[in-house]
Amino acid sequence: MKSKYQNAGLAENIVVGLDIGTTKICAMIAAKDADNRINILGIGKAENEGMARGTVTHIDKTVRALQQAVEDAERQSGIKVRAVNVGIAGDHIQSFQSRGVIAISNPENEIGRKDVERLLQDTKRVALPSDRRIIHVIPQEFIVDGQDGIYDPVGMAGVRMEANVHIITGGITAVQNIYKCVERAGLEVNDLVLEPLASANAVINDEEKEVGIVLVDIGGGTTDIAIFEERTIRHSAVLAIAGKKVTEDIRKGLGILNEQAEKLKREHGYAYLPEIVDDAPILLPRLGSRDEMQISRSLLCQIIQPRMEEILEIVALEIKRSGYSKHLHSGVILTGGGSLIKGTAALAREVLGMPVKIGIPAGFAGGFVNEVENPMYSTCTGLVLHGMKSVGSTGYEDGIKSDKTNIVKKIIDWFNEL
Image (cartoon, rainbow, N blue to C red; front, side):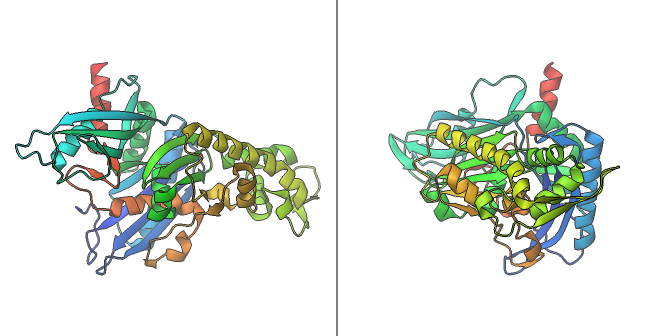
């Protein structure tokens, strides 16, 4: 992997993950040591007021928050960042299944990497609206001369090869605005990755992906869903409702400031009433002419729980719509900042009717390891792990095919055509 960072004495395999979220932006710098272990060298975080439901609404505010997060990570690590792996989400994200077929032109009928790449290109020959572009093409299964269930056909013999793939698309203007923010901050986009795929890299292992599992990443502006079975993604969705709605409910219900509501949610909030053991009173700060007042934890829970139930009920509908609800033998992994509300896992077990656990990022050896072992860093750590994986000559790895080298050119070409 070619280095795009400058720092004397460090190896070239340094990767930066950049999670541009609705409520916060997180930057993370990591590197592999001589023993091929991944160390976290720097973490930066900044509040973001320039996005709504995962899409940019104010470029200048997003750029300032992005710069602050990156500068904090640079200060901790002593590394100057030039390029980043960026996560993308938002209610503009859509996905669907596609199928392609090609003939093997090799005289010996041996399938090579170029044949796989040609087949993946064929699966992209679908009619898309002019305002949408493909972000990922994820192979689910290859079929060689009628034999299905093949996950890596390279080296096999055959004359006809087919593939079933999962295609993820995004709104071209939403993608372009992400690029604009990164470039205005003086950086370049090394890769663009769907956020639930990145989070899955950090909190789900291969065995769980094999038997079937659903990732539910409750962020600030969106709730991301990714369903895995037989080690590949089967369904993905982004819901435009998440933790920010909970904060708004608290703010309106108690008549307090947004910052106070967020603090109440983090420090005293419960998502499930039976989980409250100590119903101690909470002191609300003085506001204007209003004196200080007290509320109980159970009252706060009565504000939070209905919204969390709504989020999880929509997740349940999405799981049912995918057709994989009976295949999820590993249950559900909850992650993201929204999963930190106490009692969320218990509420999810009741609403979804499946085993539920909180997903914590793993796979790191040294540096700021303790700091990143938190669900709110799942996407950022996943982006780092994605960047660390060596990419083959076809440009696809672990079933993820990204248009990182052509997406900017496609955007420019599209505007030129107009």
